Length: 619
Image 1: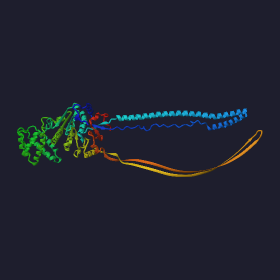
Image 2: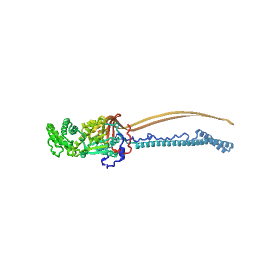
Image 3: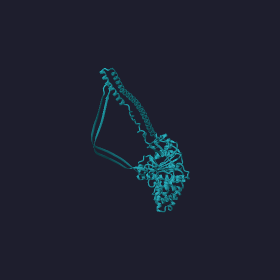
Image 4: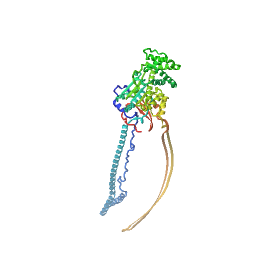
């Protein structure tokens, strides 16, 4: 978290200020996680190698018919050759050799031819397979290149995608309400958003009731831009600020009566406020010289008959005489006496702090100046600080009432506005809208009274951390609900199936075959012979089969199931609002384009990070 008050004077980084100062109404930044890196759709689909089928004819097998024919010629030739050699019959030997040679040729030629054909087929097959393998390797390389290119592109996209986008208002609202948060978060929001307002030429006045210097960062930004900065802390510097300047008796009386009335419960407001105004007017009308808080408090004491200022007191003798003459007319009821006592004690809080104005600048002149004016209040006396807060607030409200319609300018920030009462805030809102002054209200709480401001017309609501559970629930309800699909049921089923079986089969066959044959032969020449024969056979076959089969199977099954239901729930849970980081917020804006609720962060240091976009996110 940036601690502006911890920065030595003049050390605020110029680059930080320049980047914060843009011409758009930027409240902060929204974080958008880029889509995760996805694998290539082809990652699980690599090319697959299929072994090509082996063609027929790879094995060197000669045709069976050729081999049989060769053997039929070769064996008789060999037999004849052996006989011819034994008889030494030359012509017979020659014929037998010829017959043997023919048989060898018939036997060897098909075998050699088959071997040569198989070798050629194998060579062609190897070439074909090598071509297919090269094609597969090229396809696999191309696939790998495509997958790597896709993955590299996805990684580059994820690395280079912007993470932070400016959260820019779609329109210029008349008011921004900040509910919850801490002073550190408010300081970050004022520095971030205020830098853009100063860049656009707006003068800014900050009423800081927090005692935490929430406008320190904003003032540092203004100084870096060479803009004037007015920084006053009351009551210590009350001499530099004149809250009474330019007010008539009735105006001052009404201002004091309004400031005092907000210190009471609402039920006692209207009647006592009118009485307070009458008492203040009764004193102011009898003061000859310029009124001050000390002189006004002394006048009230005169009406109570307890004034002992003497010749060196704040009142002149003539003024004391006029006031003494009016005692019986003004103080005529017990309620009046009690109210005089109350008002006197209240103004004594200011007088005892030695905060009587001594010609300081008027509040209106400070507010209309360029740059930043910061007026804070701080006191160890709680009632004194409370009164000064209300006097300062109602003086600003009075100046807005006196401003003609549409003639106001600049930005008014009230930090710790929940202390002055919701009725006073509503009136300030109305007057700021009438005059054209942009109003930023920062409130620690979101109680029942302040809920009336939530989401009012022409306003933007900014919800920061709210520790109270009820207030967080109210904020979550205002942010809205949406339809969601949530996991409503989980199922897990485990099953096992066992199957056993046995089969017995018996079979047999009985067959009979009969074969008949006859043959005859005759020969001529010097002698004649004739022979004949016949044959017959009977074959009987009987077979018997028996089969016994046992079967066993076992199957396991597992089923996982999920069921989602459509529900209407908070867009942001109350517990999430309670746990927001210091500078995080949820902005709810209603513009012409519709209503939107966006989670943002106003930490000024974000602008120095990497991957910070200069343009808002589309959509």
